[in-house]
Image 1 (cartoon, rainbow, N blue to C red):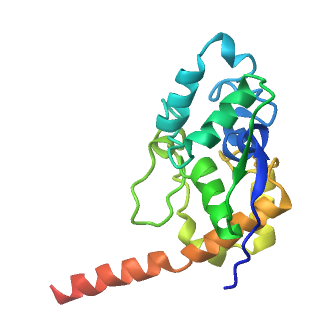
Image 2 (image 1 turned 135 degrees about the horizontal axis):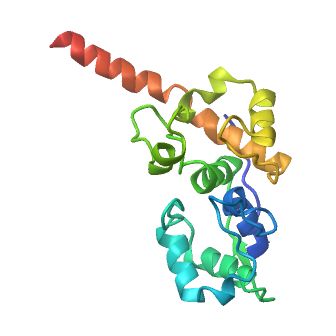
Image 3 (image 1 turned 135 degrees about the vertical axis):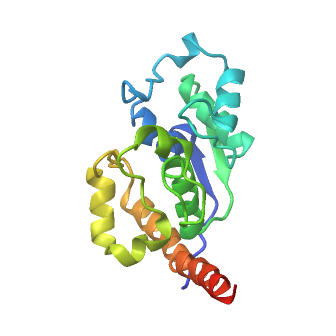
Length: 197
């Protein structure tokens, strides 16, 4: 698979919020009650340090976004505090890397990458009737269009990710393609080992 490097990009805290936080807290910080609180006027409830810590480490149903750099978290915090200086430069990234970041920030709190990964705490807490499927088989189970429709409309307990752009959705699909077959390899290894015993 050919990946195309994207040039350095100046990105705002608002854009970082959109791709990392809007899935739960809404595109306009309005939240999705009762599960996810609004972040409008968050500066009246939490300090910048508290927000930074919570983004980095998670809290309750909120997963850790520890994969984000301090500079990205600071830009998101500046956006939440309505500060004008909230831009940072993102160094070269590929669509697959963007997809990995989107999945890590928006999906891993409920979904596993492979069947062998542990079931996330949110999946246990929020999805008691049916566990979210692992991602490694997604590109075999759905066409790209079907998958993008699921992102747009949501599915069962899954919220809509209608705030994702076409490029975002393509990047998520590109990343999920890299996971294709990982379950099969791991399951086959286990089966082979079992048959040898």
